[in-house]
Image (cartoon, rainbow, N blue to C red; front, side, top):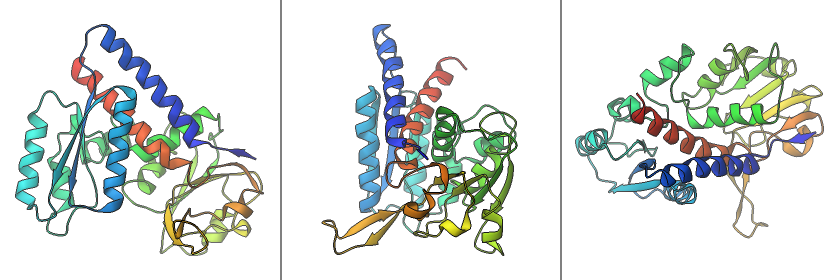
Length: 293
């Protein structure tokens, strides 16, 4: 059994990006600039955006955090997005989700300039991804592909089962794993909350990508020997025995499933660290595309 170490691979990617940025600086070129818009004071969002800012500093990017109060109106946020779209100094930006209830998330994401949509959420970029055209791939699916590639996991002709159909992970992964190329060329089954006989389906899978958000959902009896497991789930589970009062748990019963797996991602330390690394990579790509349209 091989651990797909997202923490190590994400550090490798950040080092590679830093080397590229150092070359830009040496040549007197403008370095990539990533902005993040945070509406409200959600604790998890603050932590995540703070991590993005620190990662930008590490690789030599410029970064801007735009803080807006929880009471921000949809119109005010759309006005800010318009400003960022027009700001030539900013190569890419993200809108940290979730947004307050008074704001239509879909309308906001549609307002982002697709050429600066480093999250890969805009329908134009999603459509290009579905058509196998060059575009920004959503950061978490992009990170999963990178893990599979760097650990040389064979996907050609394999049966991949995706658990979860979100627009952020599940649905894009089902498209990417079926595309021509590598990682890809697998036969994909997309399962969700209304799927019947899910154990029958997962027990036939060569690769399982779980993005359900249900702690320890995938049990050892639901998988076959030598399965490849990608656990995207990340849930806080209360645990009084732990100093923090909780533990971070994935969708997979790691202790038992890992005994049958050929490759498996841990939680934490698997897919999670890859998301920020690939957001940085998308920002670098955005900078290069703006320089060489």
